[in-house]
Image (cartoon, rainbow, N blue to C red; front, side, top):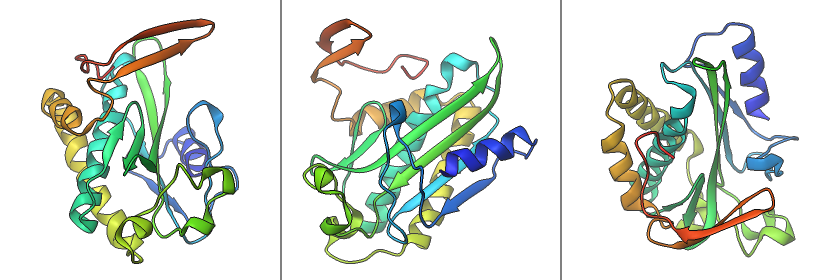
Length: 212
């Protein structure tokens, strides 16, 4: 996966801002080790190396910023209006368009580096998805009815991500959080959270100051 490559680069001391793209992945993954379908020359599979001046408990803010940067990019380049499903999915028409996987390497009080992975279904048709995913997944091509320019979308995404990363560095997370909440379909919904054998039911109301 692109996250694996960037992790190797980070351990070798590469400066933040390095970006890795792949045309396909043999070990693409999402949260909780779930496999991510990455058919060749169809999607946008990218990972970014960051070395933020954030405490470990605030790294969730980077995922929030990435989700906003991605939704803004998709809307500007395709006219689609995606929504965010907490914590890391981007949907169009209730189907998954993209996912974000943020992996952190930190000490108790200091982040060493963050690998921000973003996978976007760009030019897949329905037949490109495994049969078990076709009811739940979509792509920019399916949503717009025509192929998209992946390089153009990638460049726009990096510009938007850079802008929001700078905003985070200047302590402007509250503004990012407000925009995130305006696009999040989970806010206001009843949810069930499973933690081990414990199940908690409640209503998702807002983000806290750390991005949780």
